[in-house]
Amino acid sequence: MVKLEVPTVQLTSDQQSFRNEVRAFLREEIQSRHFTPTCDSWLSGESSTFSKKLGDKGWIGMTWPQVYGGSEKSAIDRYILTEELLVAGAPVAAHWFADRQTGPLLLKYGTENQKKTFLPQITKGECFFAIGLSEPNAGSDLAAIKTRAVRTDGGWLLTGSKIWSSGAHIAHYMVVLCRTSPEDEENRHDGMSQLIVDLHVNGVTIRPITFLTGEHHFNEVFFENVFVPDEQVVGQVGNGWKQGMAELAYERSGPERILSTYPLFSGVIDELKRINDREGLTEMLSLLPELWSIRNLSIGVAKYLDEGKDVSFIASLVKDRGTTFETKVAETVRLVLSKHPDLLNSKSIGELYTQSILHGPGFTLRGGTTEILRGIIAKGVVSE
Ligand SMILES: Cc1cc2nc3c(=O)[nH]c(=O)nc-3n(C[C@H](O)[C@H](O)[C@H](O)COP(=O)(O)OP(=O)(O)OC[C@H]3O[C@@H](n4cnc5c(N)ncnc54)[C@H](O)[C@@H]3O)c2cc1C
Image 1 (tube, rainbow, N blue to C red):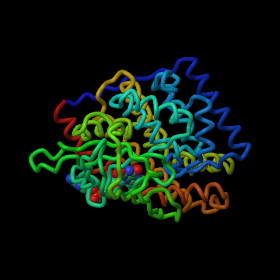
Image 2: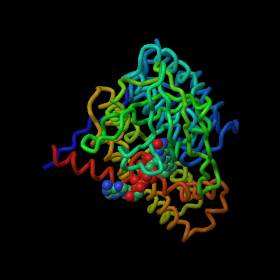
Image 3: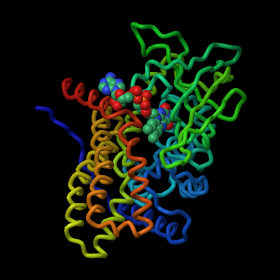
Image 4: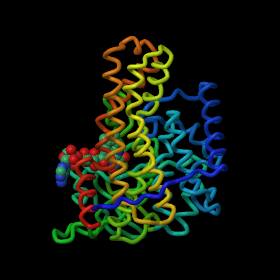
């Protein structure tokens, strides 16, 4: 029998107080109309002003060492913060990737100079990163990437393109996975490196890809002989695959894989309570046990990450179950709405529902598709 062990997490009274502090801040921001809650706000809610506010509060990079601008809080504190931000539908997309994965990547593999240069700017909410993994013919099969860097005096010349690059149009830098040696059929994962690329230098072109909603969130990014100095190589040349894979646990296990449609979930429940629709409420609340179980799995992974444990298998499980849940919320609301179309008279419900439906197809694709994750889970189970 397979044993899935994840620690249970009891919040301390300080952590409960912190949650209340974050809630009070977000309530005030919404009441002052500084932002309107949206679904999928971690991907599409971009506000550099809001990111700066979080930076001023010490709420970006909050687990990182103080010497690099962090607050040295635990991963559970960060979990509480991110959970509340997503529940409120706050516009956190601008700094999300830098906070979630570029920072931890640099802390693990970066040079002292890279840590001192980038981390304090990230924690202030003034420096944003995009993720440069996928290419037109390399998504699930990431080892097929063709973007390459060749050696030149003092650095590398980068040529190729990336696709689906979320937020690249507002980011300052991108961590680009590229080939620094030709592909070897026997060892396809060898010979890749990670470069920090300034997105505002000569040779970089960013073109929008319009989302189903008509909004601009992701991009194609082209590199034509872009000079990247040696100081901007992350970790070891040739070790990019291993380093990149280590980021995925951070990318796949957090509350953003569960709560993208939460503002819709809670908004519909509030409306159903207001009109005293018990049948609709029963349907919506039947989702709660699933939400609670996945959330406890996810916060358990945060604790494991804090302890430096390898969580790639459980992180894949969280992402698979979590993104399936996000989609199920929109589907359940659709069924409830078919009996109560008048709920759509509420402007906010109408907007949140539209966002959930139109963003939905991406939930199970981005960050690793369901089929790929289930392959990882199956291998994890077999090797137990
Ligand atoms: C909203 C959104 C934001 C994104 N943001 C970023 C970003 O910021 N940076 C970035 O680098 N990428 C980003 N991506 C890209 C994302 O990582 C890829 O879409 C994903 O990895 C799948 O790759 P693909 O699109 O090439 O699909 P493919 O790999 O071509 O897959 C197509 C289908 O085939 C299935 N499939 C493929 N291989 C197998 C297999 N071996 N076994 C079974 N089934 C298989 C897949 O599950 C999928 O259903 C984003 C994507 C979305 C939707």
